[in-house]
Length: 153
Image (cartoon, rainbow, N blue to C red; front, side):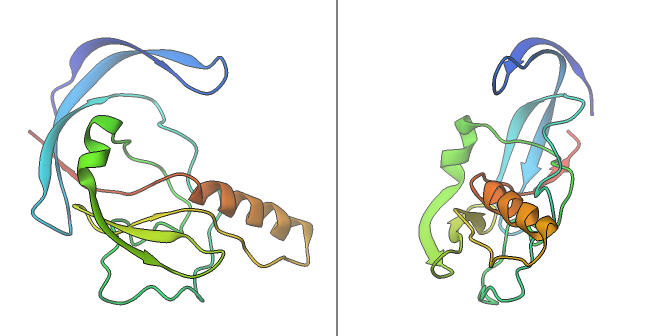
């Protein structure tokens, strides 16, 4: 991919800010459908912390087999490869939703596969590390995360 010069200020929570100096143009293709688009991505050292901040046990979640998740590994801690902005995000969303049940996230269909969003209340753990994991899992599901395949242009 060819890098291009960019001068874009990016700010985050609190007083955090960074001057982005490079960007790329890439075609994003869904692994689940024929959807594709061309986007400009700003190049950062790191998009955010690894998400989720700890692995989330989804063994008791009843996700129907016919639902193709945009990110089948959404519950496994890992690096965020890219962040798609609001200019495209709403265009990705479809109307169909599926509830996993009380105290569990909701699934939302999209052009790139099903997304998982919402609160997650984990069963209390008997150890202090478990309490930290439960809080981190809930914080993770308040955001949206998915992975897509990026091809060179």
